[in-house]
Image (cartoon, rainbow, N blue to C red; front, side):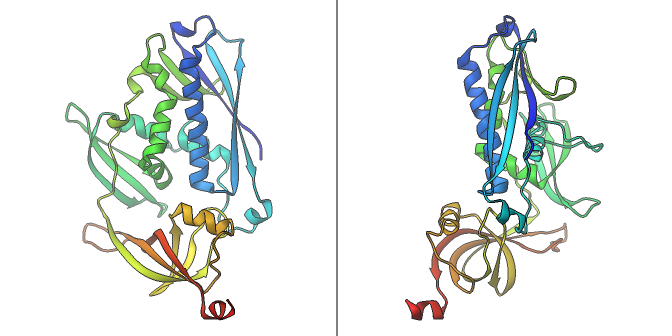
Length: 312
């Protein structure tokens, strides 16, 4: 897979001599690397790895670093036959806001959402269908002067923001701006600015409110489900039997890792004793807008099929 490149630039009196205090730079770069790897893990699981490297551009009057992001597939054949494609590094960086998406329609990135919500009070959060029949999250928020504005984000961006750790890492990347002597930070490609931050753009983690759609009904279920089709790689959905055939994600990462590493045996037609969440998006009349979404939050036990039990 091709490398993806962007430039990170720091401005201010502290970098006028093309040098930057390592105590300010190192935590920022480490958080950037962890942020990119975190998003890759959330979207691709163990199907692809990410490597983040930097090298300095000493030709500039400010302090710049060229960031190279390299993605590699751990098992090419498995990915090729998978039902779900690997999200490539370019798309991951677009979601974060480190590079531009290159589309005509404005794209709300993780960083744009953080900027929008900084210091605001959330008035309403609604999951809606857009003109392409894809779900988006509509957020209305009130600023300190009482003005209410709204923004719409994709489910991908909403899920990234909803993760406290992902949100925290994104903020830590731009924290050098909180210190005296730094005035601005940019991600750009030498010509076009992908994202720019001023001092007032940097929030504390408590300045970023939680965002939870109000039109999703949620049921917590303790049950036994039968495995029809497991996912042996990544975080692809499993086909399970619960009253009928359903598609469900396995959110119990510890159990999933053991299963995908062959430390736990759960062949098709085995059953799982689980805690599961059922989510349904509804309209103002309480009518379902789409099929339910199922998430297995905890796997307590594997129940092997009778033929497996008799052999052992």
